[in-house]
Image (cartoon, rainbow, N blue to C red; front, side, top):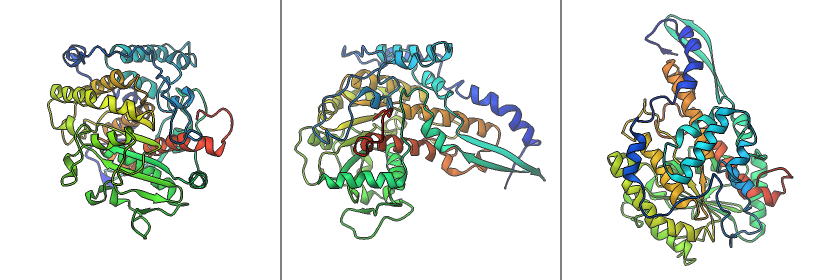
Length: 440
């Protein structure tokens, strides 16, 4: 139990929580946002004419039989993978729903106006993630009963027009065994900083109860606390098991070359170029089936807002041709930034800058065969609003740390669990023949 410095916590929470959930996004965006964006727009003339769907990328050379390439499967990752009109048709009489999706499409096409608030509107249609019930209040202390709705988060995605299978560990093991039977394991690479690392952690958690995992070159199984992912000496060392290989390539500045002597400042340009040109070295590893990557937050937090966005524009000028080429041989998925929790921030990372970066990414990568993963962002926004409500009600320190409500920059475990499940849908649905009606 944690002492609270205010009276009547029950009343304060019950009276304010519902309102706070609906108002959690007020104040995240500066009033001069649109004017600022004009200063940062990419002047290359490349535009995204899509109204919410991404063009199917070229057929994969790797795992043609396993990785689906349909717009329905893309819809698991991208809101409106088959077009935003199809998503609108699911709730045509809901004005908030329709307005948010139309504004999202305009922001994607024209690169103007904030994008994240429209994704936040969609997040309000998700089921509530966390349940907190006040069980007692005595002597200035508060006791709560906390639970989370992980399964509902995985299954209830109103903006996805088809079924998302919820994978059990035994099914994941069956999937990786089938990859082994093909003579080559399922290979997924995570390129970026901790925002992709955390998804990799959840995939490992889904595997390790049924598949023996170890670091390549070692005999012992993984440490249960997964701490090796934060040890710089282990970056770029694959986690391997029967029929699966997961590899983290730490990259804080994507457009830079790798720097083995100082991985905190390295990028991944040479690695991605080697995969894209189909000339990887032994150090690079085989071309992955799936590459999930992000530009990360390091550049953003180390520069002023205008400089950070300008640097990101430069990064994508350099990297978009590489990623387009890579998408011909691997499924490339780009992490669309969610917000940081400003009430917890230990360093300044403006949400306005992150939103502008997302729009730049759409402009540069929207037609490059890259899947932009913003359904993950919607789930993160739902969690963001609930965490903010818990913070304002004084309950943050009383709920499980796995919810992420005390972490200023990362989603909680429930969001990453759902993200990992989406990747299993992409990698495993076809090899397991999960049934009709599923997206992938």
